[in-house]
Image (cartoon, rainbow, N blue to C red; front, side):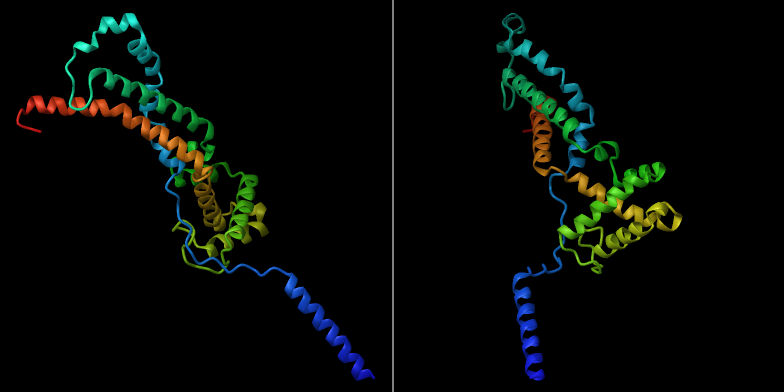
Length: 251
């Protein structure tokens, strides 16, 4: 009777464990595929947004409106008497400058509103690290550490993986080591022996900020670079016309 009762208990437990296994979700496989940097990043938008070109073009739409659609100034300029260029007539050249300036101005304002503050302040990741090491804000480092842990969990990186699978520069093992150490010693995370760990999560944080709101980043890039192309296209045509006049035999 005792043996039968024990067999019954084990049978009950085995059925219960089997049912729990069937109901519990399977853990995802550790990620082995490298995570790439997207084509659209805020540093690419920053390159042109911080140049003089968008800032100077902000005044052109007002002037262009007067030139292109103001009857009195249009008649005074007599653009129709000017010779056509290689590709465009004079009015078309002015329209390209006008619409290019509008596109760049819109892209510039969107950049100022949407671009993460980290990217606007620091053109390179080294600048961001140097800034934080000078400020030594433990609360910010702790927020970055929490974000790094969430990133590792979201992408299922194995904590012992030593390949540089994160944007081609960081290994999951290196990031996990930094996260674990700073979690334990959060009040001493700016000691000399932990600077490289702080730098690791700051590098990850900078790259995450750099690709934040990727679709909006694409929009800003198209407006800035597309506007610059339209804006500079007439200048390229005029340059080729000058070269042709200097060297008559050139195409």
